[in-house]
Image (cartoon, rainbow, N blue to C red; front, side):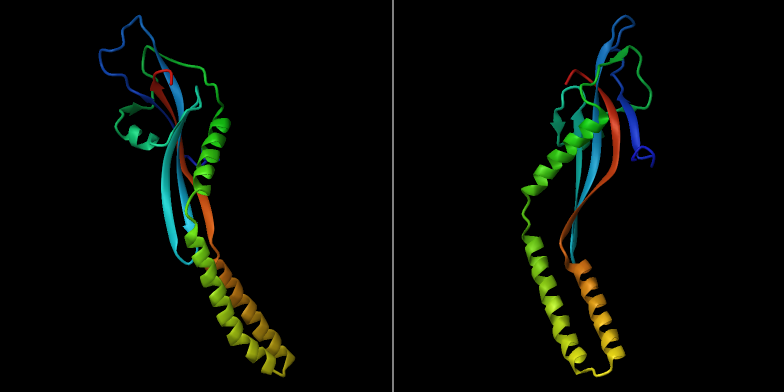
Length: 183
């Protein structure tokens, strides 16, 4: 899905000039690099970015992969005298492992913000209940009572959407990076 949206690239690290001879071949390992955005959402929103990579040869996960990629000279073309090592993991398996690792990390996060958001949600729901209930009970016209009840339910749904704590995970982009070495 990310590939169809054009947010996935394949790049190779350029070897330093003069380090590859005409008769030698250097091994490159494939890494899947993924940029995740985690949103902590309620009536207040906070986002965190994670740029992680996983070696498709060994399954090693590097949580500082994005920072390491910034300093490398990359090219979309396969450099000469380079051979690509066989992957031990498929792209799907690598992505699944990254997602599971991030999920484990997020489960150990401080969720006191969610408890506080839920308290604010309950306070707001109580506030509108105290506002609408007396009006609904005092209303003698069935049509007006139904309209007030519908307005109350709509407002309660809006408050629920605004205040209910939730965590969202989005893949911003990804790439297949071929880097020197066997790791």
